[in-house]
Length: 268
Image 1: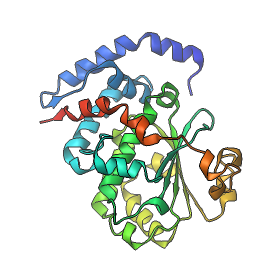
Image 2: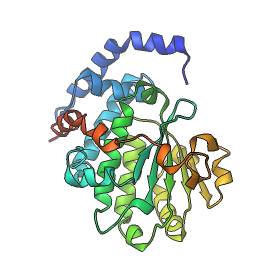
Image 3: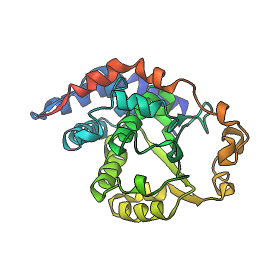
Image 4: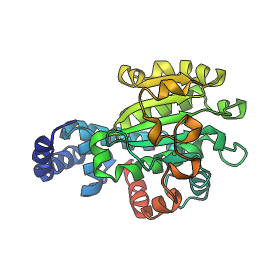
């Protein structure tokens, strides 16, 4: 993490970085890029104030949108299925941070596969990650993900084809502006372990190094995250009703314009 002085220095040069990124993007004749400051700043901060890396990431973002439309076309929060996922408690954003990093929880026990599918889940995750990214500290420091695979069964696993796993790895590693600092996997079953092995070749070394498989032993998780910020079902001290942000769906819905605007841009 950069110090306050370094942060202030880069922020004072933000307009210059925006101009550099804009110039690079406009040179791509096949891309109609989104060029407003809010959008560009997400990528500039997420790529450590490196204009070339930020521009490359934006290009990958829109290529992913073109090549895997089913994973992003319904990411806008007013979509009926996206709202259904967001209201189901499958996704939770912790109220408390860890070392100023926000924490996103995925609870597979809250995913009724007869109501929505993997594409609906991915669209909702994308919406939630963008919502988390509106926070300046999150743009700078990244996020921590916890994946709780309790009750993950065949009806979940069969949706994760090799193509989908490759798309997920690509989306998380190369396209999204946020930095994923750690992935903590708990209650992983045999299905999860198989999917992990299938996904392994699609992951870069940095991503592999940030994945921690804890099984059913929450004491391993507690070596990385204090029980004081975790809910009881993860071996923490907080009740299930009081560890995460309330009304996540309505909060994300308030930023509908951001998502609808983003969907209008991309590659021809």
